[in-house]
Image (cartoon, rainbow, N blue to C red; front, side, top):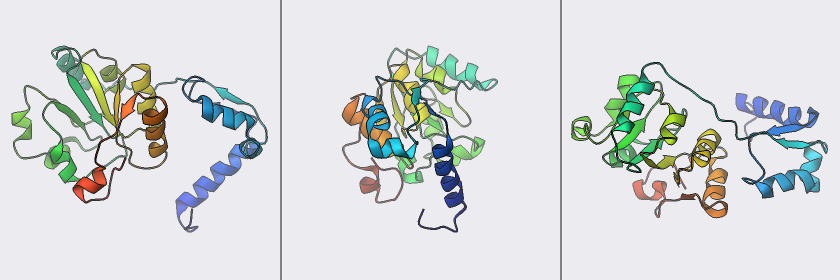
Length: 218
């Protein structure tokens, strides 16, 4: 917002103006999930004035279903072979990135998801990782059927960037989370999940402090 030559500035400004012109707000959430936020949008005079005193409606949870051809069967078939509550699912979303050093720290038996990179994903993994984890882990190098994964009985937890889609999918499937927000509203989501809803935990040491690199921070 400080750099008005940035194309993002024009986009955000247009969206902000659009909010004031709307006849109402439809939010992908529900009353019990965010009562304080919804109450503020409906009763706080400053926030109500932003939306021109228009009504706010909750329409969630609305979860997107994505079912890639071929890959879904492979992933679900692998999950079926795992004991109940034995798998930690790791995904930082379609835009999230972490350092190669941080990837190297991820342990055996975790799903590593890097969309759009295909075999390039494997270049980021520690030497011998695929061989060492062949029988206890699964590397997904393209889009993963996340809804199906989080709904599976073998999944015990979700290390997540706290994007809103991932948040809703995890909460509605009853999967506890390890919060590792990266950017945008994800830090606010992480605070809500850990401090208010108590359905997530954070690393004891901030990822940025431990690795000495910029990137994901909780």
